Image (cartoon, rainbow, N blue to C red; front, side, top):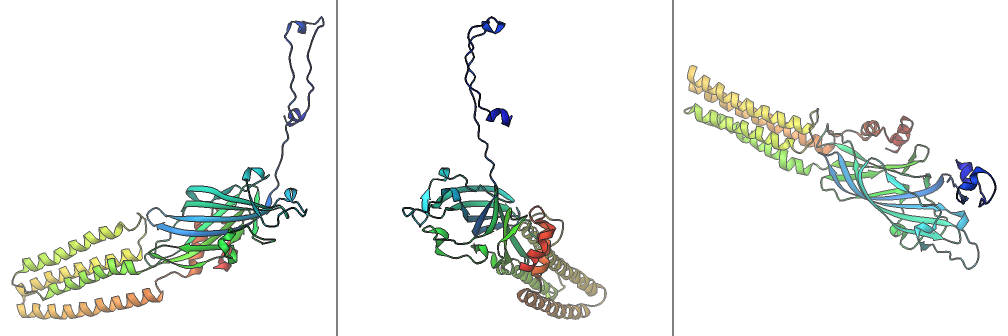
Length: 380
């Protein structure tokens, strides 16, 4: 088909003759000359700025604004004459032989635009700036929620492009990179209220440089969960322990108060469960809520035992048991929370970054090959 398309056939008109073809009308054979051009993969320097806006635990996604800066060579457009301008100038993308088509990996949805394309006519260097708004899938490790550490992975690929380190061979266009240098090839800013940005790993070229990949390390801030979950349940259980100091004259009223605390804890468990997606394993927060519910149930059972002691043994024995139980429970509950706060603030409840990196690599197996694990672990 290519040979037929490339062949030049002269235009002929069939006239006259004594053959059967004489009865057919005149046929015009039009030659079709088609030039097929195959692009070789070009080396493309890349820098990425990312602004992470939201991380959604329920959907396992995060949204970010991406500014992607590219540089490649167009030797056929180089003009070494004196008239050629040395500073890159703004050009129409359609006038260039090739402009990289960028794709964001693992993106649920994207909105993209080429903000500007520049060409240095003296050297043949071409530059492009892309602006992306992307919602990217990110499997979150929630076993240690809310003391979890996460990796946010961002990867791009370019049609017929091989990524490399961005090297400034000449002057950059005005406003390119926003006047800032990017060590490591990637920079991330964060406006996340519940996460703190720990570090940004350097840009890595994976799959024989067809992917440009980098990731940010974030960890969850504990303030929201301590004040809105832990503190509420701590006070709820603490106040429920005072039920043991109520008189046994009205056991039904004492048992009713203890049961009310248990029902309040169950209702709060349902509220807390809405913070997370339905997952098959329990988180640290789930364990804390279960411990709180167990403590509320123990307080209720102690009230029942005290009522039975007052009825079948003596009220004085029941009063002594209530006092000893109250003091013991108070010491244990306060000591437990002291250890919990120290471990959380000191980072003992958080997974180390090496272990988190290995789990993240397995979750990103469609982007990260096993041969890339060592390089990413060394960065971490």
